[in-house]
Amino acid sequence: DFSMVKVDISESWTPFFAHFVASGITPVTVTATAKFLGRNNICVLGLGGGKNTVFLDRNARLTGNGCGVFSNSKAADGLAIKEGVTLKAAIVCSGGGASVSGSASVQPEVLTDCPQVKNPLDGRPSPSSASCDYNDKVYSNVMVTLDPGVYCGGIKIDGDSVATLQPGVYVIKDGALVIAGSTRLTGEGVGFFITGDAGSTIITSKTHVSLTAPTAGPMAGLLIYEDPALPVNLKHRISSNDARTLLGTIYLPVGSLIVDAKETVADQSAYTAIVARSVELNMGPNLVLNADYDMTDVPVPEGIAGSSQVVLSN
Image 1 (cartoon, helix red, strand yellow):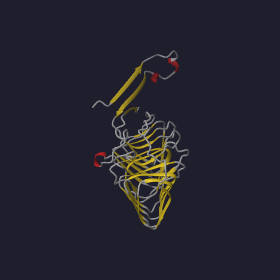
Image 2: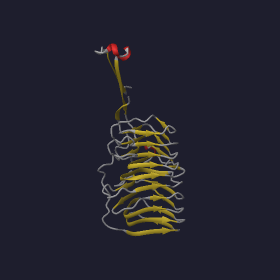
Image 3: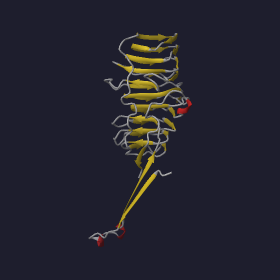
Image 4: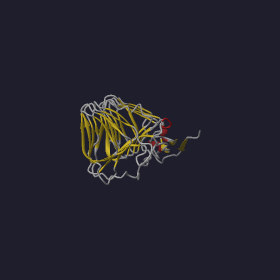
């Protein structure tokens, strides 16, 4: 199991002014250790280059079961872990530095100066969004079944609504996806593509959400896909205290994902992966990201599973 190389170099020398310095100045020694961290699955990848690309605050909990947390930022605080945070994953890796509070619990220890992880979804083809099938759809206090298509002006579901999504791609164009009130939203084999003059996706705290990504087609494996051509950095928010099934990949190459639910999120999903410009957890959420890829027929996008690399650990 050859997975580590350790190099020790020692040089004995006699400085010209040796009689002015301590005798212990020699020999000079240096040690470096490189570890092969192979087959690391991605549960969180922050693509942005600024500070707080991955930001955990206010007693947030993040568990990556069999997968890693990565920040590609080269900033000194590209990965920020604040007071009361609990983070446990297969690997925790920052392309730059990390700011870790003394009261935080992090397992394993954060590795810094890691090689940046290539965006596994870069160049992913976008679903068609040329024409509008629906316009400015708002549902309040209703029981409704929605069909896939291009929703111009977005979708808003609130009140005591019960909404069932038929399998397929839901293009949210020139508007926002808002799930509010005490809405119950369920859908198997569904994917949301956010494009045009879009607004932020908002899922509020009292909602009940259960969603799985498509098994085939342009959104196979993608639960939410944000158009890389969006002109603004949107802040998408999951606050639902009952969103335990979010099976698939959330891909936000331009925007940010904020998770601030008070209860456990995504733990009943076979796998959930988040690739976003930035990821923020605060106000005490418990985000559980699994990597049980063999437990579902929802495909894992290429590059999410098994991103092997070598890092200098010492």
